[in-house]
Image (cartoon, rainbow, N blue to C red; front, top):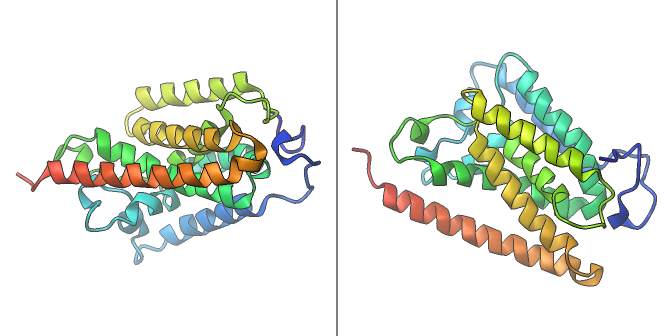
Length: 233
């Protein structure tokens, strides 16, 4: 894949700016600050912001805030996600623009949580487990890069290899939520298709229509899944 320093993002139609994309930078700063705040025991941010399927109805904001909390005290989990955001996010933000990139990130985080909910057995261990990390959002960015288009100047083989290695790691190592990775990946791919597989003049309108449709679908999935789960036995 061509990083911002190595090659152009053709979708922008102009040379890349030397400035770091502001949305990518802002997300990294906010997530880093959240990690530091997690070190304050009185705030208990991990348990307040992590995603727990059983709490979806009572505390729906957790579908998104899961992307703000990472494993403590080691920064390895945070750094892994932020490195992916740095290399892939800066490229995709330049390709899609600031607002569409932000929508991909936010909906990718939510889409990852919704997939965790959808695949969790009600009132099993997975139903009450704390899910943490920005992996769903980062995989949504990867999903955009998987869209079969020449409008993005990237090494598709490298992107596919990254996905395969991460999914393999998620299946082999306990505690890694491959469900969130998958949900984010699908969300990003659908949004990317809406932005990149239509003419440039219609690209913005189609993207936001697809985004609205995804929000509707995810809302229906959440309502249906939580309704069928019923009360705890």
